[in-house]
Length: 258
Image (cartoon, rainbow, N blue to C red; front, side, top):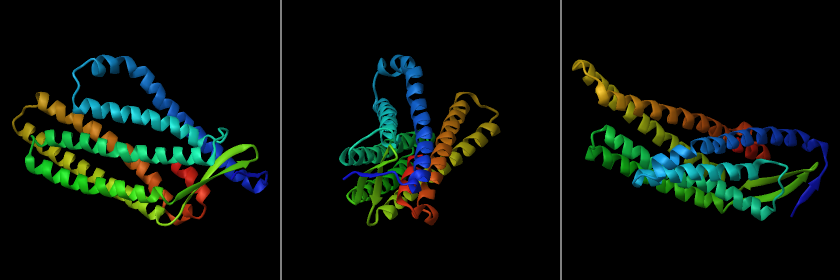
């Protein structure tokens, strides 16, 4: 059922929604623009080369991100009208893209660490066991949370809002999902940093650098960049679960879209 209101008390919420949508559209357009700029190189260096597991994982993550950006715009922009059912389906798709992409990124990270540790079987088993435990938890908890979320369309002073109500233990389950994901990222960063420091010390003792040193430098730079990006998103997401943001469901919904 659609609720229509021109009550001025909604104006702060409408303004917050509009401001949030500007950031969402800007970041989503940036993702799509980057894809357009690099499409030629992608076709030449990836699509036309021999495919491997890493090729599949890379393309899956890349195009899932583009789909995520498009859905983010549709869900977040208050001038786009959708029904309750459509909005809820897009919101669920929005959430589940993250659930699916995270294991793909985890496999990529395990492959990188496995290579950095010179294909150590012990390290591989250790990472796989922890990764499976976290992944299973991070799939089960969102599945339970999805069944408890409801949405309702509002038309507020000419803008369209779909406000989602996370009932039951949804907030707790979502917070646990992010905590486990953050713990996994911290673990992989520490393992990458430890082996890199060890290798750089060995290279310094032998007064050699060359290809091995360059490879580890590149791996660490990309790993740290990825971790910093993930940490920034985690900080925003963790703020969602603080009492200050839990007071109003609608405001927290806007906050998570940022």
